[in-house]
Length: 140
Image (cartoon, rainbow, N blue to C red; front, side, top):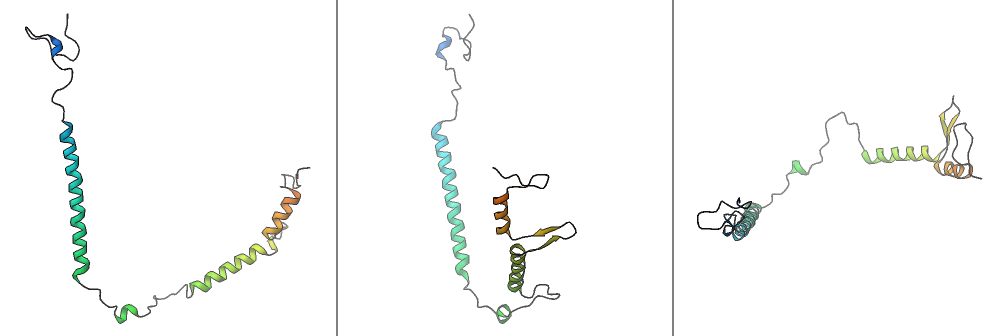
């Protein structure tokens, strides 16, 4: 009869079932826990050292007052494309608002006009979405 799987062959005078069916030299759990504890302790120590170094650097010299050159208003070199960004933004928004809320030609040769969004939504709710022939297909 052959020895059981995982067992060494029986020595003379010893039965095969006395030997363990696993590797008896596995890593001990206590050693793994100690190693993890050591890694986390080292990480905490490194974090404390970094915090200490940063605190020492921050307090090593007091903040300096700003110089006249740093506080003076500096203009970028030319060409100055945007002299007043705030007023430019307001002008662009006003033009966009007027275009969205006003009437006008979108494509005059094709007969397409631009109408305010609110008016377009009212017409769409009243007439329905136009089908491919150009007519509305409102629900009865």
